[in-house]
Amino acid sequence: MSEETVLILGATSAIAERFARLRAARGDRLLLAGRDAGRLQVIADDLTARGAAAAEIAVLDLAAPEDGVAPAFDRMAETLGHVDVVLLAYGVLGDQTAAQADPAETARLLTVNMTSACAWLTAVAAHMERRGRGAIAAISSVAGDRGRRTNYTYGAAKGGLALFMEGLAHRFAGTGVKVVTIKPGFVDTPMTDGLKKSGPLWAKPDAVAADIDAAITKGRPVTYTPWFWWGIMRIIRGLPRPIFNKMNI
Image (cartoon, rainbow, N blue to C red):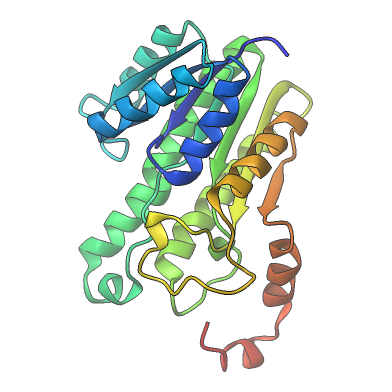
């Protein structure tokens, strides 16, 4: 497989870092974007040691880039020369109780997880359309499959992101641009440190990263990870409302 250029938006997340390691092992060129300059550089140095042709960093707040999404993306694309693969991996879980009590917190969660993400995907899509090929992947969540009282603000944002990606997939159907939506279930990462982590439903970042890599390679439009979440969410989506409303999930 020939060397590819890979842009990771939200590269300090545990899943994104494991994905970057897989691409580094193939000798790809990577650009890592995120807010934490120190952490980004540590990851970049590690990726170079693992075989990456290059690993550079871009330090910015992805939810609110200083001079806008389009100029920021253009700089990244110029650094890489062109972009073959983009993984959008940033987001915040937030707290549903806090969101219910504060409209500003609701707006923040929606902005970070959906609105800003869709803006980046729009810039990426324009680049891919000009080139006529490439892969666009974004991490959504099984939480977006049905609104649930325990996390419906986060779920609404991720559901909106998944719908946006579905539209992009339709837009690029029959072209050389692959659009891939990733829907993880429970993943043992710092983002979920506030949750009890036990039981067979929890996955490790390495396994999820491998599923993302495979989905991009094969061009799967939607991938649940681990795989069994497809069945779980099919059941949850199909529950009649009177039964669903009695469940505390």
